[in-house]
Length: 215
Length: 312
Image 1 (cartoon, chains in turn yellow, blue):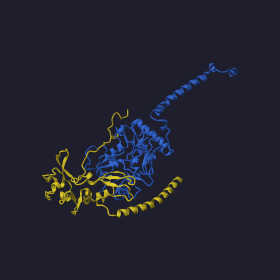
Image 2: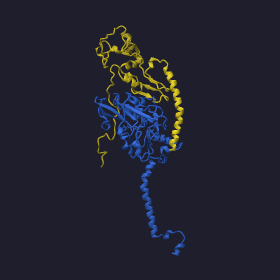
Image 3: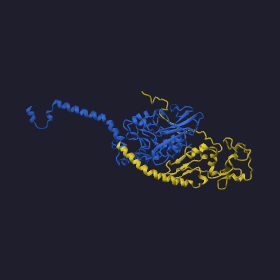
Image 4: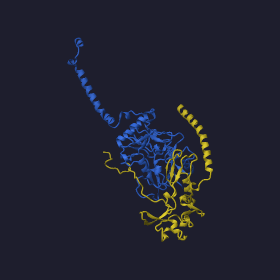
């Protein structure tokens, strides 16, 4: 009993030191948060006392299309979006990758009733566009996804959706997080069916054999 | 008689019949005793060093004694497995109590968590042991006893959901109260641990756990040297001896250093949420406050610190 009392007395001491320190830290951090922030990492949620960052993976930039040809050095020749799309006028009637005849054949689209131009920007194919016609760079694809998938985005912001690695305690180390399209194909976002790994081999799951039976 | 009393040594030439029979009996008795204890002696000398036999309980190890124990265990790992390992004895952090939550709407049953556990925690390769059992459950059923763990078909199935079950780190752990030798207990950060060197392998705790979360080392674990995870904890993933119980420790050798558990890092969908339940800004607290969480077999009063929830 006395040991327990001593422990609780000690923890009160620790509390009385920690609470004001924490309060100061929270106030300082909230002041820092009020400063205007870059749009790029607006979806990065950071605990107020965090010392290490949460790094969210981002696409490198606009995607490229493999032309199937190889240049003199043996590297595959890829085409940028604007290589074709500056000369080809957009066709808003096409709402499915299967209807395309010149390029992007075999593109499977299964994303509700979205058409290509729901997300792709016909004014600048090197960018995406939001529902209100504002352009958004490919790197910030999560902003685009979050327009419709609010509950998932909210869960993501609170660490309850999407894979991560690193530290739960950000005062001791950083954390890395996936973005939406790391796991979901934006053209067919449902997570694919796959075979499970590591089938259990419990002795309870094995059929009874003469080896295990009592003599 | 008085003549005999004055007779000097040697006495052998006038040994009495009674003394001879006594001596013969004593010799036979000593031989029988030696034969009877010989298995014990052989066992103790073959597998168990004297230091190991005399090692005290984890909580009674004095300063410096733990260092010696760890040095001995690291030597044993080198000798038995050919692996250079580092065993730590990380202590709970004041103000930290671990809790876990799992989103059943997101889990697809891929069992990558179970695989990561198998590798992280130095489980016996042949038995494929893991602290996590992923149960395939029929939608509409919440009875974990009716789930199947050895499903082998593409997942997720439309009429199923998937529920990984591991140690629930109960606040009222039945496994702890049944242990006859106090080889298992609950630490200040909520983790139920086992002192593998104190456990007598009676398996009472395995029988007492309503979540089937405890495992028994039927054989000496076999792991190729290159597959041994060298980052080990005394109370967690160091290679266990044969004949003792083991269990999930929320990877305390990682989580007590602030890192995420191996099963969470392996999860491709982010179904798992881990953190400090005492920190009001933590992810786990947000889940508890904003999702309709439930615990398994709540009616048993075990007070699990592992929470499940559905999105809708």
